[in-house]
Amino acid sequence: MTRIATLPSNNESWGFFGTIRHHADPTEAWPIAMRAIGEATGCSEVGVRDFLDSRHGRHFADDVASGLFNGLSLQQAIDAAVHRWMTWTIGRRTSRETGIPRGLPYLIGFVTDCEIMAENA
Image (cartoon, rainbow, N blue to C red):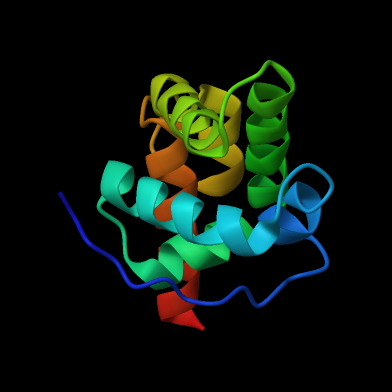
């Protein structure tokens, strides 16, 4: 189990933080999502934070909101979204557009991509 620090969002208006605020307290949801994604992917806290701050983080928040709508607790909804994003895989088109290897789980692919972008910045 990987333990990561909970970095604050750099994008509280959009991304995960801005989207989840319509469904749950973002200050409660943010550290749960950071921890769950970090543990599932093994990626750095910077990669996880940048993923959550991205458009992909907004889509992840939509998935969490769907779980909340279906009666799951916040923790359960985040865990379900993590599980779902780990079962979806990067397809040929996304691989061509992003350079993320085809067949990699969505969550690992997009968080790693954010991690690489942060290192190159």
